[in-house]
Amino acid sequence: MHSKEEKMQAFGRFLDVLDALRANCPWDKKQTNESLRPNTIEETYELCDALIKNDVHDICKELGDVLLHICFYTKIAEEKEQFDMADVCNALTRKMITRHPHVYHPSQIDAVDPKPLPFVPKEVNSEQGIVNSDATKVTTVTQVLENWEQIKLKEKDGNESVLSGVPEALPSMIKAYRIQDKARNVGFDWEDKQDVWKKVREELDELEVELNKEDKEKSTKELGDFLFSVINAARLYKLNPDNALEMTNRKFIDRFNYIENHSIKIGKPLKDMTLSEMDKLWEEAKNVLNN
Image 1 (tube, rainbow, N blue to C red):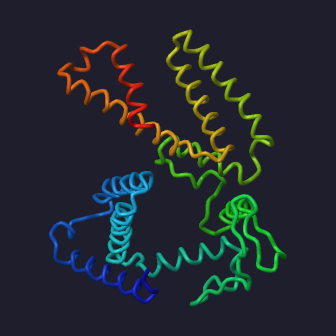
Image 2 (image 1 turned 180 degrees about the vertical axis):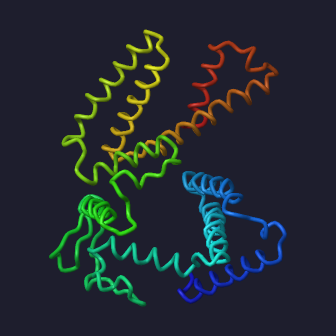
Image 3 (image 1 turned 90 degrees about the vertical axis):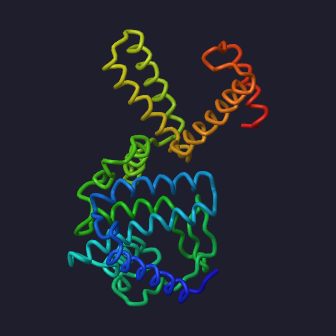
């Protein structure tokens, strides 16, 4: 791994290249926040794709692409004399120090070389939290998250309400999870996670009633309620519903591709296959692909 000095040199070299491209490349010259935004969304999803595949090479590459966009937006702002990379880094550093009072003293917020509190974590555990070396203080992960939300509400330019920090443009499943998680951080949650199943079954029953009535509008609303309750159940059991669904998507794609490839080999189009034939190949795919 590289030293801090080598990392800083690499970042500086990258910024120099970005400056040169912005000044000399016709494509880079014409880019704006608006023109870059669709590409940023695409690059972010490509990073997410690499992360779920746990492809280290692609993760490194896609992180670079996302970093390029972050720095490009900052370069555009610098040209307009709005802010620059130092402002971005300083604001982020201040926020991280402010929101981690269990690690940094408030006096370190604007320090040039911020120093953490004089203890070294002996153990980090998702349930127990961070244990000081002298075992005199324990900060659990739950406490950290609760403090984070409370501090955000107190900040001058922080969130005006608990849920206002959830981006409107988030995909619906991720947004539902974040809404529920933020509500949990201020104490609005099930006391016993097992109680959530009563709500899931209640919402499923209500959905089934409306589906049987063939009322599309009410069925859509009840479907939303049911999905929201299932996502809530996943959260309570510390499962990420978006990751879970993506794994199932990939599993379905692999198995369906197996069926399609078999149909090509035997020269029989999928539309000419019976459901029974496809089901047989589906079960075969489960065994062959082991998923």
